[in-house]
View 1 (cartoon, rainbow, N blue to C red):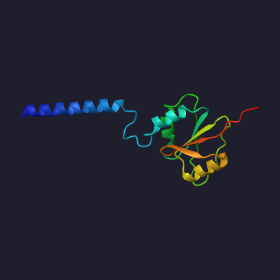
View 2 (cartoon, one colour):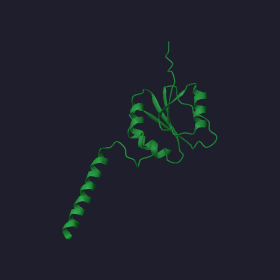
View 3 (spheres, rainbow, N blue to C red):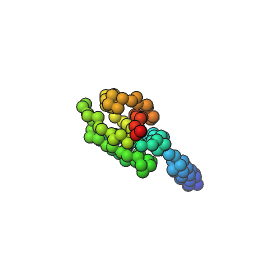
View 4 (spheres, rainbow, N blue to C red):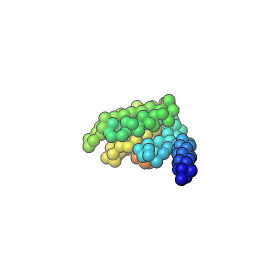
Length: 139
């Protein structure tokens, strides 16, 4: 009877080790619901020039921005604005940033952003939007 107990323990340890090996090789894991798309989003942002990521201080957004920042190139800038709530003044983004990425902001804010910068938003990940604006070239 003791022999079966040893086999069960060995099986459980082997399954545990296998689970660790599989999860250690994954870019992200099922339990990372909020930041699940971050590797994909970071690749898109890093491939864009003159980029800035905009988010607010609501709920998990600050943590998600920090998580994403570890995957971004050094030249990508981050802008964390106060919690947007029901009213917000869309921030002025310096003209040097031609690619603006908006992370997890309410829909009414996205509409205001489109109006201010006169450009359409493109969904690039769950609740992550890209706004591209032309860079003015001096004559």
